[in-house]
Image (cartoon, rainbow, N blue to C red; front, side, top):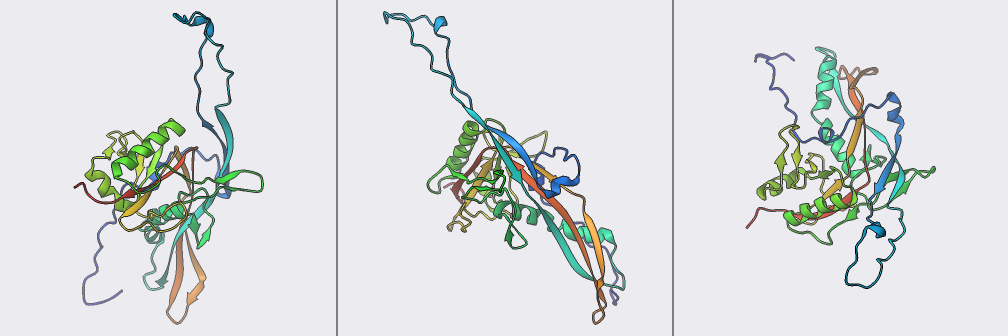
Length: 296
């Protein structure tokens, strides 16, 4: 790249906060085989209450207390599965001043978080529905072995409502259906609406955003706001999702060049950087439509 003007370094690239990877737990994968997909067992459900009839003093009834009901099954184990997907950046380089591998990885870094969250929301990679589980889903999918790859989002509200109502409903449903710290998934365009109502606070220890109920918030740039059926949200609304605890694996950035792609007419060669991801979550899968806008 020659010219009459001096060559300088451009500004440093600064990644946006609140990316999907930051909100996920990162357990040890135990080797590279996770890239073929993983399976685990979720113990979902709850507990019940009972009493010991011999310890109850009944007064004013003239009789003994009733026998306690039989214990019923309150939780169940579900075999769950998740598939991996790869994010890549590819570009053609002039053989004069050919970029090194660091520049190839930097090209990936500029769009990686967006593409990861877009795939995790929509379930689409490379134009095909291959990312399981994903958020915007209204149907269950099991593989031939009966492993559950996809759950259908449970819509906790029938229609779009005020953000405080929506976040409260998701917090309450997570508390009832999951019981632990879950994750609320928010399109980045909705974050200002939530902050205008003081529905977001920052955890001083982790720097993560939290709901009033204490669940993690990820406001990812690639989240589309679409509903469980994949349809775009109505004007002035977006869909929010909530899940149980989120976990993820990711590989190292792999950089390749392809000498066979040499274009003699343009004197260029193809370079490519890629990284593979996998995400899954526990138990709860909730959805609710929310009205955008500041308080009146």
